[in-house]
Image 1 (cartoon, one colour):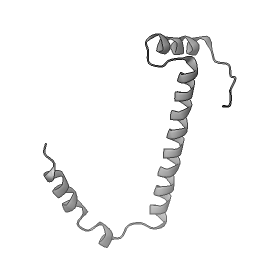
Image 2: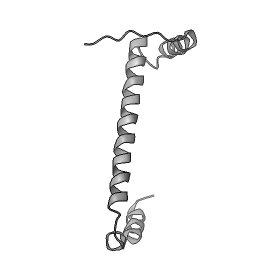
Image 3: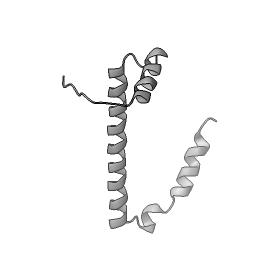
Image 4: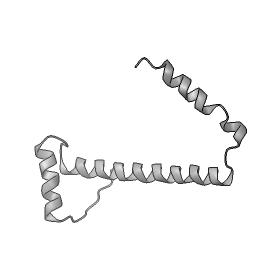
Length: 82
């Protein structure tokens, strides 16, 4: 497993220690791992979203493709037990 060494300011370290003390994370290392995982996940989701948006701009949906979507959506919502 790779190791990363970094410096953070005292306030951030204190905030992480609060998370450890409150049982949100088991350790500083876990907090850093979780933060990095969330950062990477957010970046990847944004990248995919941009790719989807660009694809729709290059090739927008046609009227034929979207006809009936409102009715279908309403029907699905009406089927819900709420």
